[in-house]
Image 1 (tube, rainbow, N blue to C red):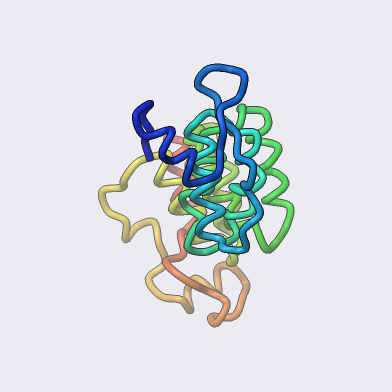
Image 2 (image 1 turned 45 degrees about the vertical axis):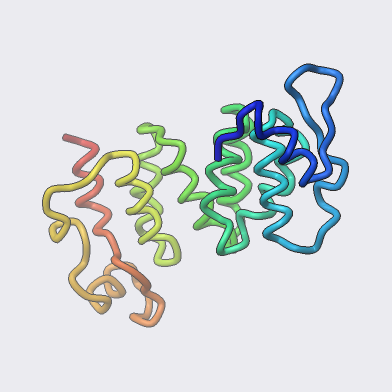
Amino acid sequence: MFISENTTPYLAEAFNARPTSRPGRWTSRSKARTSDADARLAAALACAEMGDAGSAIANLKAAVTHPSHAETALRTVLHTLPSRDRRVWINELAAEPTTRAIAVRGVGMIGDRTALPWLVRRMNDASVASVAADAFLEIFGPLEDTDDYFYGDSDDAAEALGVDADDVQGRIPIASAFAALIDE
């Protein structure tokens, strides 16, 4: 979403925002008053784009757990937060089972190649293995022949991960194959 100086006043009016004492900065007076998740996300994205990331971050962080908003909100938070705060937040997400997949996805969005070994270790966790492979590939780039890097069926993947086949979802990566890519 790109906002120009020409459209900022119209968006500001739509989200009940007003200019701050600093030129080019805006703040919203009603950023979280609505119960509509779509409206809160739109307002938070607009505030972040207009330079008022501080007031948008809380709503954007909350939106990452909403399935239809997760991707957009996560990318915006990661783009907006300073590097140190971004890592702290990712670690907080990774510590909770309900948000671990979001953290793994965020690591891929950050694009830090030093995180590749961490992602390989996540590939041994059935609950985030598929997401870890996607995040790895977002950083590493596409593979020529993916068949060598993923289990052929869920029974093989379940056996390798030590879980029931019912607990396996998506294409499950072969962690050792991905680890070999790092060592090359």
